[in-house]
Image (cartoon, rainbow, N blue to C red):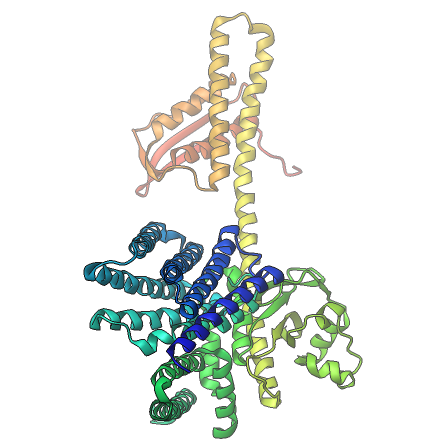
Length: 628
């Protein structure tokens, strides 16, 4: 097999594989939940790659110059589609970086347009050819930058879905960086690397397939700790693997004939990709942890580290509504589970509903407090193994699981959340990344962690109930002021209407009536403003001159046909909220007026008292009887 056969085979694989993947995306509806532009860009990138592979394969087999000139144009086109797809993903994760994204989009479009224009010129001199190589190198470098930005800015919940996509694109971009950088350095392409470019680019297909199948919206003393043992084992395995790949590459290099070096490069890229998967894959790490825990330690868990981590996760300072997700995640990470859901009872409700999820299905079903499942969890406090229940239901006595729970295909464990003897809720965990055997150690850890999580949830609910009670208390206190203010306003308007029957032709009364209505409206506006802003009145504490306040109270009493006597005193001032102080004194004066006949006396007196201001409101009314 010569270089031409390998080249044609590689590009043909690219064409057929990406065309089949495009048909699969269309038929299966994968990515249908994404926005229209995002799905269109993904399909465009896959089809453009298929077109590039087909043109390159046809040009290699037939030698037609037109096909060979069209292939680089298709290569630039697929880069443009991948750039657009990656840039479209970024704003959904980092909306505050809109300005930087616009510059990145302009840069990517400029690179693609310049490369397309240079390749469309056809045969050119050495300077143009050198410029083509520079732009061809800039395209994969820009692609690596976009992949790095996407992966770094993704949330932890999204990285699991996007990891295969980022890994696959990073592999092909890195290979192109090597290919074009060497060509730019030595003014010629490496024939071996160029011949296997199609095969290397075919490696991205399994990663894209995995990403698409992960969801429709993928888019103090010195001692050997468990972490050290785990990473040591990883390094040993990685070293052995690299030695094995080096041996295979050496053999292929010297015994592979004319195509030995090309195959060696292919094996190197495939080996590095597999090694990266080994290091980054959560399931591989989980299996290695299980292996180390079984064969190197008498106990499976380092309880000190597990408890510190679990407590730190539950106590993290986040929004209260995120507590449910932290509980699920804390329990799931104890067993390397993929996700889970939380069902909780709120207040005096007699049903448990799903309140939070983490990489888990949203389920609308509710479970009654008197159901078989809830009564079993509350009375026994057991962790239910759903796989064991399906195979041997007799081990759980008369327990009858609800249909909705048995219908969740990835549900594995049901962990009760007990606060004392009260079942606060329960967590349904998905299957772990690596198969694990449940023993007494695992079950005890889950039950104890469940009780601690229930304690945090109960404390959060108690805090919310206390805040609600304080809000009602503040509202009740404020309503007392509102009632008094409304009472005064109603008294003013009632007196005005009563006098209007006999004084409606009096111009002075009409003027006074307008002033009274305007004053009432202003008081009601301030009242509404205070109701919107809370118990605290608008504005801050400032100097208040009592002479002005008393003068307004005298005028208000006069508008009711009553006299408020003011005992002479010096000019006095204090600090406070002037409107609130006036309302309080006004309530006292109004109560005194209501309890005193027209012929009686009501007075107000201000004086200094022990470095403060003393305000006295008095009357000679009958007061309240003992019977009242």
